[in-house]
Length: 85
Image 1 (cartoon, rainbow, N blue to C red):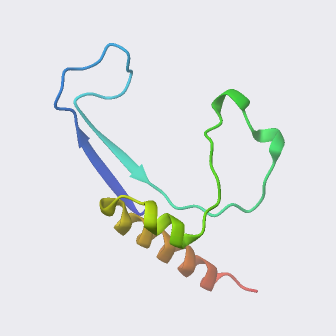
Image 2 (tube, rainbow, N blue to C red; image 1 turned 90 degrees about the horizontal axis):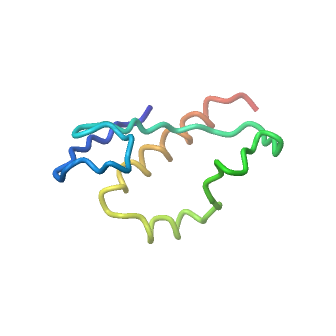
Image 3 (cartoon, helix red, strand yellow; image 1 turned 180 degrees about the vertical axis):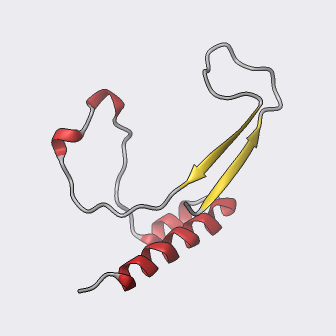
């Protein structure tokens, strides 16, 4: 885990949500995929995603998310350096 984001709702609870209210946290993890198994995909649960160049990500990312991106990149780099070849 590289961080935690803390949120506090300032508006009345929506009846359409089952999310914690009024305060909740979001843990942030970094992982590295070791394999891909297309049979493990649950079609109705799939969130669209794509690989992007770091320069594109840095251009598009919201300013307050940049420290999390840097921490994630540092964690991945550190892990890769510790892996034997």
